[in-house]
Length: 247
Ligand code: PGA
Image (cartoon, rainbow, N blue to C red; front, side):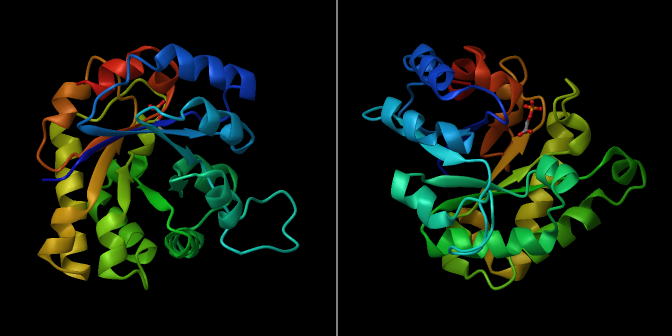
């Protein structure tokens, strides 16, 4: 049985003091021992968020990191810096990073390998555009993204990874994929993992759906056999997040 994982992606929202206020507001709403609950917060909020979630069921994640250990990379965050603060997860290759900050499948792969080196669990994002869906190439596209993201990743590492399937057309648009559409792609992703590794790895890896998931549609999406959780943007900043955790 795969343990469910509900992660909030706060994106570029909340100052450190606002982060603490939100964590305190959500504290009692997100209690659920059967689910891994993660807040991926802006890097500058991490120390305050780690402190504010001490003794709770919530883990803190980052929204990005660089793939080098240290050096002349002005403005970047090294994996050891995250590890030192107690960060357990990192979102890698979110479509906004790909679109606005020129991330590619190759940089995603480098970051995934680096995260594992530091025992930080990567939440690896993939997803098609509306044009790609209309062209009927969704599964081909995602298959390519997954195959490149997992280059040189061992089966033992892959078992611990989290994949977030986020159709780009559903992110922040209020337009959610239907539960059947999401299930189809998540099952396709699991099949690719089985093909790269084996059935045991495919069975262990956790796959989230993301894209306008909210308190109203979470239960139906999470009821699907290959959807093991959610990556939630907008609704993670509201009390609704507690309803998703408990859906
Ligand atoms: P959304 O964002 O829930 O606001 O659509 C999801 C994401 O980008 O991870």
